[in-house]
Image (cartoon, rainbow, N blue to C red):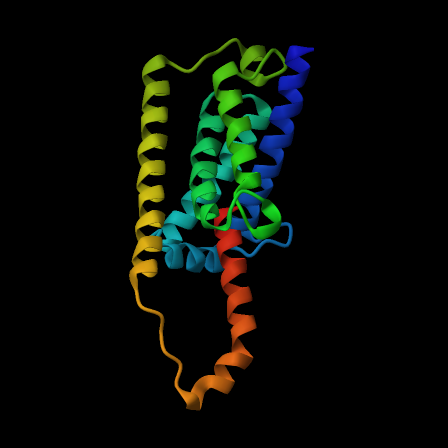
Length: 200
């Protein structure tokens, strides 16, 4: 029962996050593709946006596939945990609930990834079938690399958010008030979409 539960968790978490990664990288499953996601990353302070978007999408896509298959554990869950930590911070200013754009889903995925990294993939996995485990030195390198990249990305998002909060609000001139009022919903919607696509 324990191993069946791990299999179900791996397939759900890994499958969904691999799909999110494919949306970012390839525009699959009605996803935005790399260029719009890169623009969203740039706006959040994750630069260069193209490289960071590819790295995030790759972490979700490859990490999701490894997690679902139970292969090279815990590389997949560690990669997903790093991506979901940054996603939680990206959505952190919107509160804990997902209906307000908050970090609920990212934090739930993070908890599941950490649990899988700690427990292992279980008996119904390619690791168990092959009887192979990652060398400890490679495992340490993977964890350290993921932690360093996560810390760098999180710091970049927080720094950019603080810089924006410290800037005085732009003053609208009477001549542009009508145009601003008309265009505001579209620009806000695009910004929200880009942020969600980048951080999911």
